[in-house]
Image (cartoon, rainbow, N blue to C red):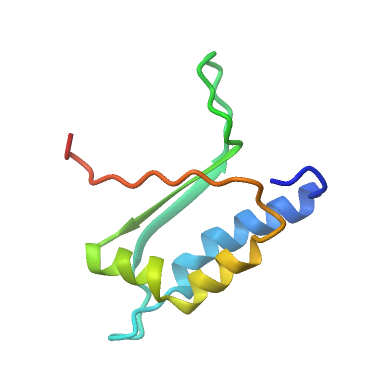
Length: 100
């Protein structure tokens, strides 16, 4: 987060990120398509901590749903736009479980 951002705003951003699970709905079915969403503040006791303070995992049922989320979903796109001037840097890490 940018240095001037207060804790209350950080918490608001994090809660809104998690709320996307309910707000992101399929244009085909009108139903929520995010399987699970969780996140929290980095608290590793190891000396290998990364520079990011907060992390989130969002699980989709299909590549099609993930693509819609990233490219078209109005709720997600509005959320991303709301982060301008608030989040300094974001790291994105996509993976498929069990694929190594």
